[in-house]
Length: 338
Image (tube, rainbow, N blue to C red; front, side):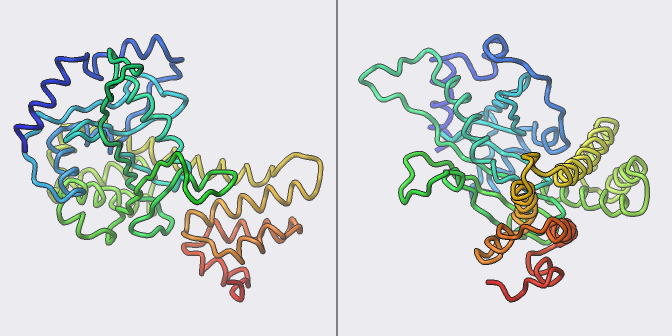
C-alpha cells in the first residue's frame, strides 16, 4: 500500500509543480489581505510526524512514512478572506483541518472556497476540456472545536443547511465533521493521539489560570507547568516565546469577538422599523443558541415571533451565559416549548 502511495506521489511531482511551488503565482492572482496570524494549533501541526499521527487517529490507520505527506496550506494570502489552519495531501486525499474556539456554521461554505482554490492549483498543467477524466484527491474536512460553549462530541455541518430553499437531493454538497476536543470529549480519539490530547491539556491549563489572573501571566504559568509535567514539553521548550505570544493573541481575539457580538446585538438592525430591530435581535439570540446545539423548532419560532425589545435583550443576556439550551429555556421560562 505504501509503495503505491510513493509511486502516486512521485508521478504527481513529475507531472506538475507542487502546490507549495505555486505560492508566488497565487500571490500575483489574488488580492493579498495580510499574512494570517499563526495559532498554536497551526504551528504544532506544521510538523509532518504530528500530522500523520493525527491522520492515523482519525482514520484508524497505522501509516509511518511521512515522505508521502505533502503539506499544502495556503500561506501568504487569505483567499477571499478565508484561512485554513492545515491542509495536506496524503493517500489520495486532500485534508483540510481547522481549529476553532467558537462555533461557526459557515465552515462548509468557507471550505468550499478554499478547496476550490486548492484543486485549481492541483490540476495546473492539465486540460479540463480533454475526453480523458482528470482525477483529483478526495476532499476531507475536519474542524477541531474546543470552545467554552457546550457542543456535542461530533457534529456534521453541511453546505445545504445554508441553502435559502431546502432540497431533498442537493446537487452541490460539502460536509464538514466538527469534533469537540475539550477534555473529556472524544476519549477514543484522544487516546490514539498523544499530541492532540496534550494540546487540549495545555489549553485547559491556560483557561484555569486565566480565571484567576491576567492572561499574560496565565499563559506564562501554563507553559511552565506543562513543560514541568511533560505536556508538549519539547514543543513548548523550543518555541516558548512564540507560543506565549500566540496564546495571548488567541485569547484576546476570542474575548474581542464576544464583545463584537454584544455590540452587534445592542445596535440591532438599523432599518428604522421596530419590527426590523426585533427581528435582528432575535437572530442574534438564535446565533448564540446555535453554539449550544440543536434548537427545537418551537423555541426557534417563539424567539422569532417576539417583538418586545426588552424581552429580547433579556433573552440575549441569558443566551450569553447559558451552557446548554435547556439552561437557557429554564432561565427564560420557556421550558414548556418543544
